[in-house]
Image (spheres, rainbow, N blue to C red):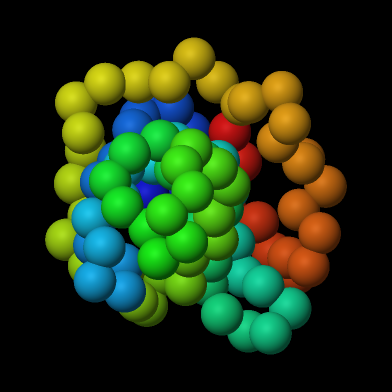
Length: 94
């Protein structure tokens, strides 16, 4: 679902480390540490840091209750780093 959301620019919501997140998913891939990761711009919900909006990385195995939020975002944000630094494999990129 996350790969499709990245490709089609769909806003998603999920639970991560006890916080409800609303994000614009920009990249799904395997990090050099071996973890499947999501790079996303969080626009709503809550975060441990409390600072929103902002870029976040999420370990896929720790994401729960993924759902489509029902709207799209216009495409990659201007400050999105397309190089995917630290990723050994990219499955989808906005």
